[in-house]
Amino acid sequence: MKTIGLIGGMSWESTVEYYQIINKEVKKRLGGLHSAKCLLYSVDFEEIERYQVEGDWEKAGICLGDVASSLEKAGADFIVICTNTMHKVVDYMEEKISVPILHIADATANQIKKSNISTIGLLGTKYTMEQDFYKTRIKSNDIAVLIPDKEDREFINKVIYEELCLGKIQQSSRDYFKKAIKRLIDKGAEGIILGCTEIGLLVKQEDSEVPIFDTTKIHAIESVHHALE
Image (cartoon, rainbow, N blue to C red; front, side, top):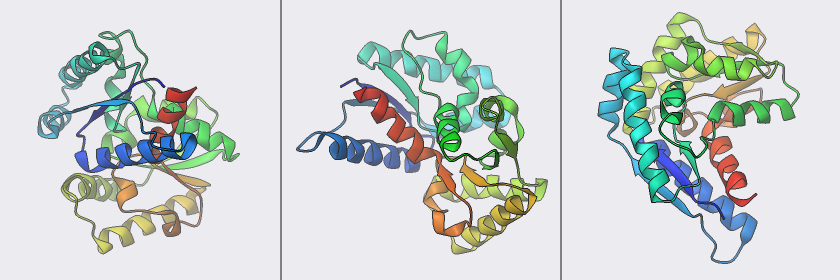
């Protein structure tokens, strides 16, 4: 079994989900008392979020690159960044390590392709929805990407940072997300990417009439596959 290097804390609420899913999946596949061989470096999200707001992605990338390097030195065979947004800085991180980074968008695109879906709706932070670093990876698999309108993007981003990252689950926010999902479906979305690792805490399959692709579960299970192959 390979050792998984987890970069968490962005937020720790979803990092907990990663740890649980990974270990449950290892137990499911191997049985007995098996659990995952993994290392977790949990960062202070306040620092990372400040870099996001300031648009200082280089500094954020150098910071997470140092974290990835620490995990490699500690014995990690590959790196899993437990967040969608910070995959924006993968290039900075890869300069500091020799082990691979398991990209969340690639794992998600592979699952979408298995469902024969050609048009997907994307929910996430405003960075993930509006910038190209994530959407380009999905589109490169011949999958069209739709994002919510500006009002919905602002509300979704606010819920992520002011509620979900703080462990607050509000029914009113779930109701709004359901409406935002319906609007994407009306535009032609055949499925929905929960492109922020916290959204799965709020939105479930029963909240959508089309397939939901929860990136936390997809990424965590793919990391187990990679560790055991």
